[in-house]
Length: 309
Ligand code: AMP
Ligand code: ZN
Ligand code: FE
Ligand code: FE
Image 1 (tube, rainbow, N blue to C red):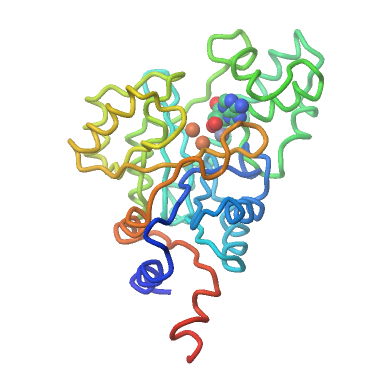
Image 2 (cartoon, helix red, strand yellow):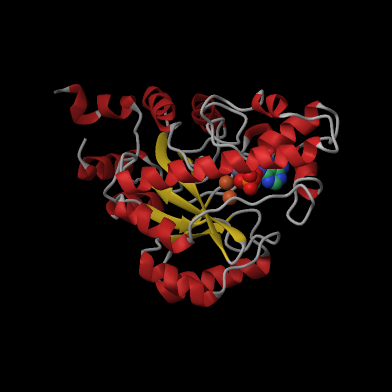
């Protein structure tokens, strides 16, 4: 389908007050539900569109796309790219890029490898003090999924060492704890260039989360020069003060403010659809990207001219 035709269908079918959750995880990384369930639950949450943004992988796109075609809402293919700046983890959301781009896929494969060795290292450290081993962690990882601390947390919960994932993130697996290990990841500028290079739109995720170091303003100017599209404004982890700062940067640099729930299923309290972007943002995204298209419900084709031809 042509980009222009997709834009026309979005204009026609989406309500003016459409809600588009631009940040959600599945079992392909550290969420607890399948890509199909993401799409179904997004429908149940009365969303009009949902993005799949697993960490460092596009492996859930195909399944989520089938569910969207068969269903009633739009799927926005995306990713949450792990980057690192000044020792802090920085997440770069990417949307509507070409998932087969060679430079991008090579970098993502490297990051997944680094995440995997880092997870093993964390489990080694934990196993010195707790009854935990790698096979106990693996049992919580879907085949091929991007590894993260949530999978280790699941094994800790199963062994009764902690109560839930959230406890892991404030205790054993928190930065600064003796079991905490980071993984190497590229500078956000590189992530931004790779996503742009693949025709996609880079957005810095939760830029003012209170548990993380804030990005210095000078760095944002550098990221804008590299092709930054937006900043994730509507996200539960952005502090009120941070939202003011993000809004100033959005205005100063002509960026797009986005929003999303960062849903992880049962592992994190964020309900699907608690934050979202609007119809105009989605249409702007389709107009300004060139890598891939949102996936539309097949039913949209059958009404209008599709039925005749
Ligand atoms: P990692 O990517 O391994 O550094 O682990 C951090 C990831 O765990 C982030 O993407 C968080 O969104 C995710 N996460 C999942 N559940 C939780 C939780 N309950 N509390 C904090 N972070 C969580
Ligand atoms: Zn996550
Ligand atoms: Fe994140
Ligand atoms: Fe996330």
